[in-house]
Image (cartoon, rainbow, N blue to C red; front, side, top):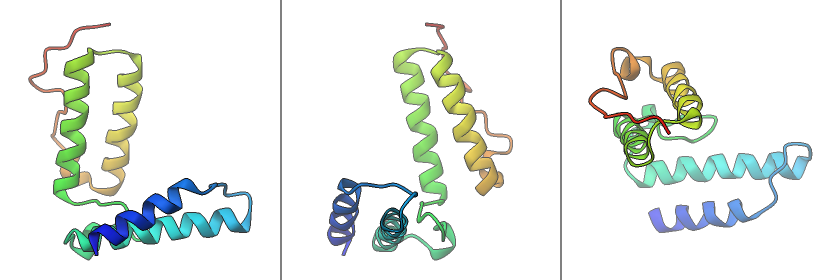
Length: 115
């Protein structure tokens, strides 16, 4: 089931996505449904899946996103892009799962070098 959900998402991602047409809106809805199916296939709790976008909002997904940001910043150094992107990523999680973000410093312990 997981393989089928991934394949469906890949096929949908190759299509033209525009929210200015009925076809584009239908494609976006199908993509969101495919994300939900993938989350279910991966064993995610339904309470951890955003019903509108299909994004995984589990603690595991949060930790993965957090570690990805930390790794990229550590590997590439701190820059304006990281500052904007990290602010947006944290705001996104704070809006959906404030209990994960509150008191969590994503940059704690990193040796930041300005680039």
